[in-house]
Amino acid sequence: MTQNQYEQHKRRLEEQLRAGIKLLETAYQAQLRALEMVWMLQVEAAGELEALVSPEPAPAPSPAKQETPPPLSPPRGRRIADLEVDVRAALPHLPETFTRRDIVEAIGYEPNRGSLFRILQELVEQGSTRVESTGTGQIPTVYRKTGAPDAPVPG
Image (cartoon, rainbow, N blue to C red; front, top):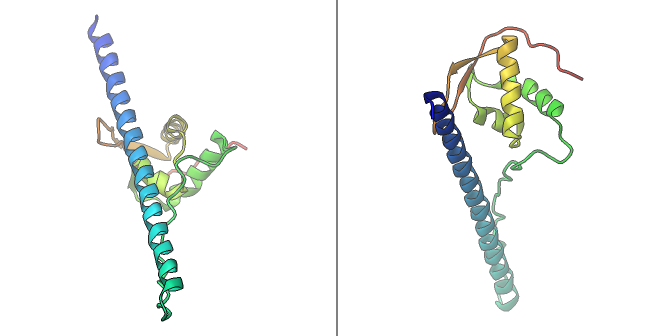
């Protein structure tokens, strides 16, 4: 095995580790949201049952504020061209330096990682962004806006 092959295998293993951790974290978040939903429904049902059984009307429970998390994946039918339009529209609203996570928050959904990476590479090649620092392990790649005008979006 050459040094180059060793490095390639090592990078692939690190990528698989990051993908596995991300998948595990996503599954945990989904389970946590489901558990919270069950809890809230049980509390709500218990309050309604108590109101039916008690002779005095109980004060109405204040509705619990519940933030709707962004969908984990883009809506069906999304194409890379749609993602590119979303990313370019979000770019002016991002901080001067940003990461992939900032983009996900700005567009409101979790896009395909490969598609987002390709779009970010195109933005770097076109000069509208540059890589401030390359990510490794748990440290994300940081991009910086350059102020150069965006190239036209393919339509």
